[in-house]
Length: 372
Image 1 (tube, rainbow, N blue to C red):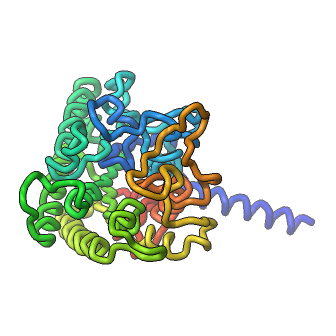
Image 2 (image 1 turned 60 degrees about the vertical axis):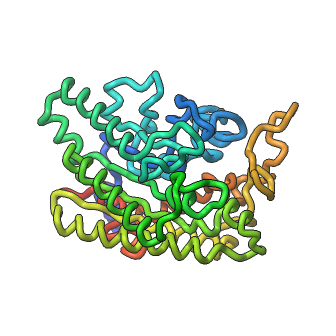
Image 3 (image 1 turned 90 degrees about the horizontal axis):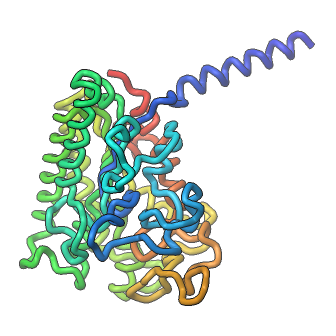
């Protein structure tokens, strides 16, 4: 009996030690940059055609009681889920929201904007959006407020522990490959030149953030856009097929991005780490093996029907959309462009604890706990 009690005690101690190694502290700060995959509502405060401010968007977002928050999905974005897993008590508020005060900087701010991209003109068809450069400008303004409140030393101390996630590039690719979206109003450049242009412009903004104090970076690669509903529909692809050329373009860009991040790590380690989050392989794995993850559909949008323009809106004279799927947890895609919360949860879990094939050079949990 005594031996069993002793073993139970040792087991409890082991669990406690393990939790201290993995679970984050109560203080967690996250700054989010990117496009509609992680927008938390900034576009609600812009004059833009790219909005998610009406039902059924947000139908499964518990903090809002199922009301739209500007997130382009039915529930939480992947950045929301990652922040929760790492200890955030609340989600970083959108920078443009009138309720976002200067002291929000202490827990983090979301600067992401739907339809935006790495390049300045990306998303111009939708009118209003915040390009990545402007998002970093806004962060610089937030930082200035923080310095005024706490001083330069305290600000830098906080920033070196904060998580910086950048999820962008998809719209730059879509603007290039979709026939309905003209690329910058000029003749198309070669795909190789665009890939290089995207990487070089992203690198400029990463170095700006580093100069401003960022030390822990999560850079999310572009997913398999050739498999999203809008691209498959416009290419008239049969069931089970993706647009090969589009995915090859994305893979080419991701390879160049990964190489550049490796170079930055060699240049700036150990004080700074840039993680490459391999969203392409994660999403492709979900699509190819969707039944194993509990999904029944990996091709069609849950909301918006099965044919362009895939408009996801509330149905007339009803409380739900007239084109909403029966079970949102069984679909990979929420609308023509974005994943469901169910798919976001799987992606987040893999990134948190994945090996080097998923998150390179270390996973997100290790990045959070990293101390140079």
